[in-house]
Length: 264
Ligand code: PEP
Ligand code: MN
Image (cartoon, rainbow, N blue to C red; front, side):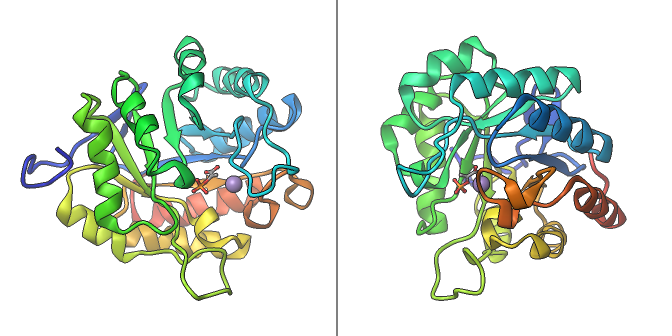
């Protein structure tokens, strides 16, 4: 179902009115994690002003250490939604476990993110496959493109065809960056599949000074959009500050992207 052979035309996924995979780029932006009401409301307002179409923010965080901040949970979802409502933006947020699906549906989360670490959590994939909510499927950090598309297949085979792929870097021997952004995955996915693909230059690089250039490269390579981390005070962010850009830098990046492609 994810294959171009089965479905030759590009798929456009509608996220509460925002069309991902159409002629215009879609930019999803916001903090790694929702922290405080002021933080998420402030960032939402700034990214909206610069042209983001969807607000991101994690409430359930897949952290390497169990002692690191794990996210605000349901309270975080409420803060995210209230900031999004105030700025007329749909939201994308990560679902880590099927037992929170009821909550995500009740709160009308617009786009459900499946994180890199859960890309092959097949029961979770099947569970979101039974929903009528679009899914953002991030590439596993050691997944081949074929394995990634098979994970999309798990979602689609249950009936949910609204899948957006997100390249977020893969593990290589290189240590200068957090992960290695696989730009060639964009071309490969476009050839193999009809699904839209966006790029996350934040987790791909782990370095805020690289985010703009890798976002530009992703768009030049044919990506349908960008998801990136924006924080009002990156030095003091509760999670992923090193790769988070300020609203000012985000605004600059959006201006550069507009020079190469129209943005939703
Ligand atoms: C995220 O986008 O918040 C995230 C945890 O990313 P990934 O799953 O790609 O590591
Ligand atoms: Mn993050």
